[in-house]
Image (cartoon, rainbow, N blue to C red):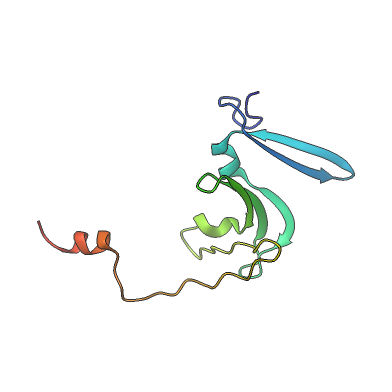
Length: 108
């Protein structure tokens, strides 16, 4: 079955929601599922944007998070904890550089 969004790639992810007492299922490819996300009706506690259910290609699982992670100005990387999971801490900025950053600073 082709993806309901792009109609080009094979669908691998099924998002099912209930809208006005009607069950709606979207059949999406991994790429469209990652880009699209499905609004949950909840607001992000950090920035107020609507939280969306998204698919992680890295973990192969769905998660609920803020779509603001891709914003250049005022990004938000909030991920809602799963049931029984503790709240994730905010990232902390440090002076420690990654090996990639150190290689960019040194001349060849």
